[in-house]
Image (cartoon, rainbow over all chains, first blue to last red; front, side, top):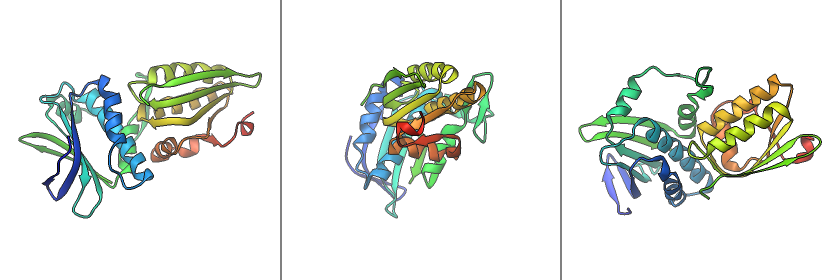
Length: 142
Length: 108
């Protein structure tokens, strides 16, 4: 937790490590509630996006090798950033599977699919998925 | 707040569910069960003024419940959505589908 590091122009102010289990929702919620956001709308955006990504990674990436590192900070232009770093073969397989581009009702599953992706896109200015030798990184810039 | 609490009030005009806490895939089973059950059999007001977060799973339940209510000739209102609920709804681009009200008298 804590500390400050620079990578790709981003200064990370705080962070935490999670196993990637559904039971960690309350812990993750406390983590996002404690982020040093500049104002309440920013806090609400980072809370919605953070919880949505955490939810998706728990559902589609776990089990994770070495856990999930989450960092919060700002980029070179001062914009808030939220980074998720993890290693998961399952997540890459899930990404390759066909899925809805736009939100749509899935009669078989009796639920809406694709809402989370559009939420994250519309609540942030940029979402990047980077794949490297040390694993996957999802970087959200607000 | 880690827990989701849902309390029910039944009136002669419809049902009111007061939802408090986070609605996410960890907590939404009770939310889904109660919202689906009531949206089919009564006009329903969801007081979401104390909801602390709303994930796509929770939004999906709301959207499906609105469809169910319409199919059953019922109505569903969202009462005093918290700022984070309003932000989540608007982020989907489907905000026009949600009947958001500021007072119970606007529903029944």
